[in-house]
Length: 381
Image 1 (cartoon, rainbow, N blue to C red):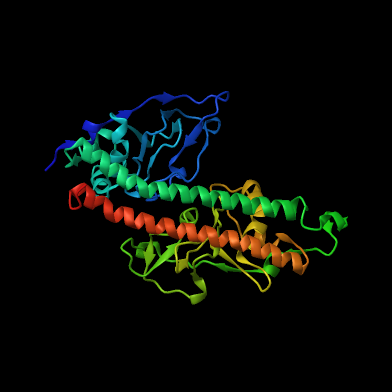
Image 2 (cartoon, one colour):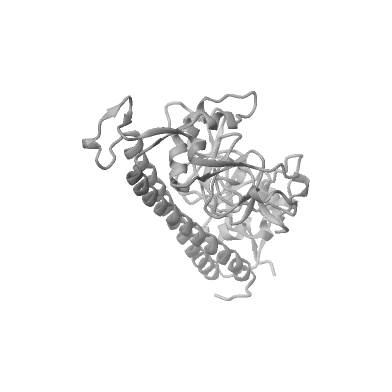
């Protein structure tokens, strides 16, 4: 029984914003929201945008209306501006904000919005999806459901902040020891041409082994879980994939939990893979450590060079990172005793990051299993 609609509980906010070089506000584009994750992965600055955008307030719901099946949906964690490809939705009652968010997070709503999309690049809009029916009549029940489900996202967001802190700690340690050269014992070590005595520069491929992806056929991809996940460039920021393939490839093209991967087109994303056993797609490279080195050391050692290449490589349409670029990267390697210590510390950060990611995956599964049961009344509150 339909008791109300999204339009009964919320309103569509369309406050236009004209960019100004004198005003720096957080900017959220579709590229800053990972599909299906229900949280913001990053954001940019309004000083970098050219065209008019929408303004939003902390607590507003941002729903990506271009290709709504990507389920790009977040509760804004701050005031800012966003792409006009988002619908900015504000609960009429602040206490019902979380409930409204989870109504829109349901697969049934995403399917509804997708079916009401138009154009070659499917796009929906407020008047097409705001009549989605809600069968929870009691305001008290709606608030309770929102509170229950938000506990999971509180855990997920808290873990995400811990992951960010661990990433920062790893970057700071690597920078302090290997860039600023303030490593343990630096006070008694002579520096010659920027290289501490007893250290040496080694080519990246002398300390790591690259595995380049396989050219899987995209027309054979599926999202029903048939076969193995395929790690594509777009999947690297999240570290996992929801695209599968039953195609077979050489076994050396497999990716495992915790491996380090780099995207070779676009923005050259880097991450530890947390999506389990998967295939490596073309234009993705896995770097595996050789004996004496760790996966974490390879990642933090190579990041600065990859970021530099990301800024300096140019292309007619899309930037391409090639083996020729990777072969030219040199890594500063310390004596064995310090290398062992660096490996141990950086690996401890990596393992904690992977553990927190696994906790988040389990919380997402639990939340998404509970969500439709609470909304349908199968589980009462």
